[in-house]
Image 1 (cartoon, rainbow, N blue to C red):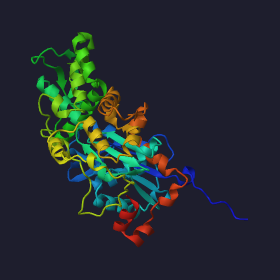
Image 2 (image 1 turned 90 degrees about the vertical axis):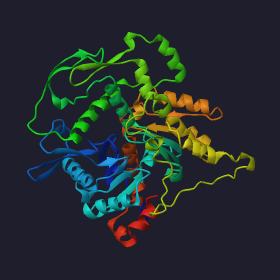
Image 3 (image 1 turned 120 degrees about the horizontal axis):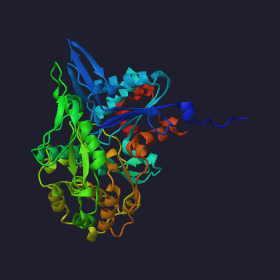
Image 4 (image 1 turned 120 degrees about the vertical axis):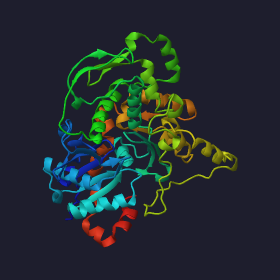
Length: 471
């Protein structure tokens, strides 16, 4: 009697899932609902007395140390410091008591990940750490698995980037991906300039020994605090990292998106009790009116029209629109999945399209324009289905009212389409959607067929493996 084929599940596979992001890196076990450990995508590098050491524990980065600088591991959703990334992984493995030789690992990557980055990942996990099996998967693909929607439009509003990715049959249409830098860091910089315009200094927590709360009234208002002294010079990178923590908190507590029509009606009703105060580490309580909070939030939708002055680092449209086409003829690429396309009628062709694209290239692509442009470029048969399955994820997508505003404006711009946005009400699921999807994917009983081993890497070679397996 022949035994039934063995189907492996998460308990037998026990895979490790790693999801590096621009602000945080997540790691945990397949089948879990949330990551086992979340660390900043930064680390502290201490170079004192000629001895260098790295600090990954976030609690040890609250106060400065002599020779301590902050280094980025991930920028624009891509690993930029592979030595730092490797050291961070080793720290995570030690804390979670993970033996790399005993379980496979799944790594998520950005849709704009380079060929060199894929090769580095293969060598790091299969050769250096000797994992028995490895798989590399696009982050939007794992998001689609997290929501159980193999055909969807993934809108990821993160820290460094906003990306819009069409997913068909669980695969990314890479040539249709678009993105901008008008994301979380863009909002952080606006908060910093808001304080600068009011002549308010942003002093990090480590500088304050004691304070007295003072409500800001005018530019002459001064903070009343005792400064903490250090017998060494604090690095600029540490100062900026400490400021970032404050700006992140401001972004979480103050922002509120609102429809334009509602904004006009609410402005007339604006009263003192609608002002929100945010207390800075030095004791200054800064007022933010409803209008201030709405303008800052709505800048995600119209970055150049909403703001009265340029934002440092985003002075020109080119500073924001960094992702329009991800293909690169100079490096090995994956086989692109191309769905069946229905030929357009000749009268449907837009003769003025090149001129319109050239004109739009001079403008800043806000969130609405970004999603709309990707929808317009889709095949006519795919557009209704993906418009009905828009998945909104990313930490910055948690801004109150952003979901409703995006739905309202997309519905207004597409009266013939049924727009439906799927955004989890669970904060963990929204922030860690990519990791959760990777956890689900790698715990499927049939996924064990996709794992790549060191033997396959040696037999086939990195280039062919990347082209054929990691598309």
